[in-house]
Length: 335
Image: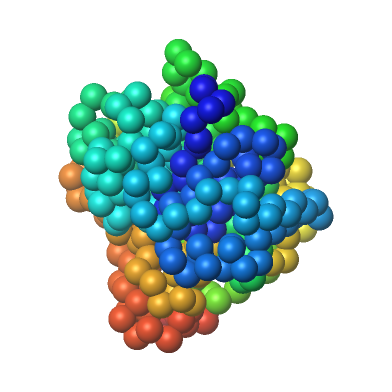
C-alpha cells in the first residue's frame, strides 16, 4: 500500500468513523466521506474512540480529511465501503467516477450481496469482501464506542491487503473463505432484529434464555436454508454455526460462562438495527433475514419465524416510534 495515498472511508457512519479513526490514530492517512451532520460534529468535537476494554483514542479534526463530496476519492489507494446495503449501488457509482482505477475497494458491510453489486458497477476494479464482527455505537459529540469484541476479516489477496490495513487496536485477518465467513456473520446478525424489537441492550437480551431460544429458532431456519442451497457458513468465533442453537438454549449460567470465553459485550452494546429504529432510519432487514428468506424460497424451505420478524421490523419502521419493546411471546405471536 502506497503510504502517500489515503485510505478513504466511503460512508463513514458508526463503523466507518471507528475503523477510520483507529487507522488515523495509528498514523495512516485517512479521509472520511461523511454526511454534513457528521462532518460538522467531528469538526467541532474531534473524533473520540472508546472501547469495551476501557481504552480511548482522541483525534483532532485536522488529523483526518473530512468531506461530504465524493471527489475526496480522487487519490485513494484503498476505499473502505461502510454504507448501508441499500446505498451500495450509489456509492459504487461515486467510486467509479472519482477513484483511481487501481484503488482497492473493500466492503466492510453487513449482508452477503454487496460485493456483487460493487463488482458489477466497478467493472474490472479489485473488490474484496470483508466482515466486521463488532458493534459500534454513535454516542454523540464525536464519540464512537466499540461495544463488542472480534477481529475484522478480509478476503485473502496477493497484495495482502488485510495485513496492510491491520494496526494496533484493529486486527484485520485474511480469509481464504470470506464468503463462508460472511454467511457465518449473517447467521449471527439474525439477532440484530431481535435486539431492535426488544429495545434491550445486547448483554441483557442474551442473558435471557427465552430471547436466546428465539434467536436459536431463527438460526435453525437460517442454517436449513443455507444447507438446502449448498452453502457452508464459517464462524469467526471458535463455536461452529451448527452448534450455536444448542448453545443458545443452555441454562443461563452455562451459556454465560461459555460466552464470556468467546466474546466480550459491554453493557452499552446495541445492535445497528436498534440504532436505525431509534433514529427513524430504514433498516437492513431485507439484506439480513431477507437474504435467507430468498434462499429458502428458492429451495422450498419453510422459514415462518423469520418472515414474522421481518413483518414486525417493517411495522416498526412504518410506525416511526423507535424500538417497540416486544416480548419473545409477542414476537412468536403467542397470546
